[in-house]
Image (cartoon, rainbow, N blue to C red):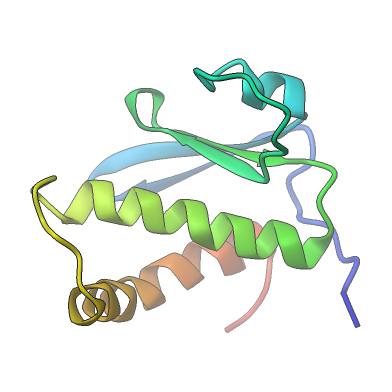
Length: 119
């Protein structure tokens, strides 16, 4: 059963810091998200991270569960950008497991705060 619980942020911005960099999360519509996509196709974007602006977009019409999973996904992009210092790494399963394990606590802390949940 999918929860329909909304996030505590609807029309406002939520900010967090990761590795000294401040990021903003904004819930918005497809039109705004697609303005930042180079090949504007007919795909539906659940979320998008804009690194140069330190901004995460979340599709506001998503259900609670999809929005939560999308936020975790986008936060993993931020985590990799902030803590993995080279772009030339050939990711293998072991490295991805290490990254996820190391990111778990930090990412979940941000997600729980965003949705106002206790651990």
